[in-house]
Amino acid sequence: MLREQLGVRSAKDGCSPQGQCGCCTVWVDGSPRVACVTPARRVAGRQVTTLEGIDPDLRRRWVDAFVDTGASQCGFCTPGIVMRLAGMERRGGRLGEDEVGRALAAHLCRCTGWRTIYAAAVVAAGAAASPELRCRSGRGRDGDAAARQAALEGGTPQSVGAQVVEGGAGFADDTAPPDALVAVPDGAGGWAVGDSPAAARRAAGRVPGRNSTVSVRYPLEPPDGDFALGLRTTFVEPAYLELDASWCEPGGEPVSPLANGGAFGGKCHSAVTAAARRLADEHGRPVRVLYGREDVVRLGPKRPPIAAGVRADGTGVIRVARTPGSGDLEAWHLAVGDAFPGLAVEEHEVAGPPVSADIRAAGWAEGAVLRAAWEALSSGRTGAGHPVTVASPEGASATVAVDADGAVGVRLSAGAVLDEIVLRSYAVGAVHQALGWVRREGLAVDDEGEVLDLTIRSFGIIPARDMPPVEVVVEDDAGPARRGSDAVFAATAAAAWLAAGLPARWPIERGG
Image (cartoon, rainbow, N blue to C red; front, side):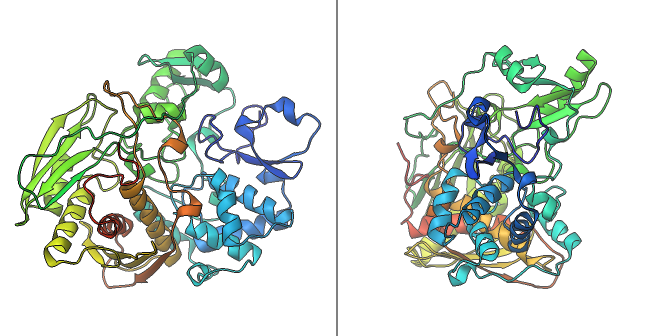
């Protein structure tokens, strides 16, 4: 009702609807409520408040805090989080770290790694904070420089500012004309079309996905041989919040699904743009093409699973899984060779969802992690607290240590710093994603290759309350600005693996 009938665009659809991402949070009689699982009949006669309707001074204070601390990147999840935290403050609730962590359990932010959101709450509400959260104010920043830093890190043009925090970054589905038809996947390789998302989903016979109780599995057997170091991984969901969406006028160009962020490479070849162009021409009307959360999980590309073995002399084998319908993995092979030349790459066909070399640092990160772990093992520097240094192909360098208590220290050198707050935010986000990759994230896939984990909570993403403190030191060095967060991603994964004792399977905490 809010989006389709009233045109409210701050409430976002990130789970379609599972009630698990928090992007559509509003107030009902002043209390935060997830709108997507709240029937309109239940709010008859009650006051519903969206971000557009809260007190302007309250909204401005919270929005400024998110901008000043880098607590918003793509901005898709942020309006719901602001509604949750500002609602707590408005009702007199304490906004300490424990309280904020519990409140954020209703939300997912894939970009920022949570710690900058804690910092935003401190800045907005004046709550007591640990030293790690006492960040420098962002007042007086150069907005263009901040946007250039974000575009460099995200890999696509990006904006920074109040409009992003408020959800106004120009997401494809927010900009579609109100009279557009809606198309969704029909489950048989085609598209079901209707006058609204609900009508299109009914036409497709859509049934909401559920969490599975099946453990993650490892599709590749380890290579034969006498290896000093081994690693097997499984399918991992990129889990970007803004679902694939596009729209097109008849005879026009489809709107990009990459409005304000790179989706970690997951949308580089999304099918929604070509479908929007074709269906608009076919129907003679504008058409919106939308993936639901289940569609993204079933159809979207994943990081390819591996099975690797490294010998004591630094040579070895890395097997990579290729699934039916996946694109060419030649770039993945080359990236591994750049990171760890001693590894021979073997490609193996397995059943499963699509995989892609477009996913964040795919191939290079795996090779860099294995090389860093082999070097640490060779020198006896394993265990918690040992720093790992990784240099990226772009020329950035990150040194990361994971302490025994879980705290993460990062030292990042990525050329001339355009905006330290943005760079720090991306670094913390990379730490979050890397820790999840090593420890918790994975998808259950059956013998036929069908994904069984179709809800956000089943992906294993680390929630806010479990995210450890992250201290980032940014070094402003000579040379042009370079993407730094991928180096942080790989170095963190290696450091977390070392801290855990180099177990042979990821995710460490969810193995079958």
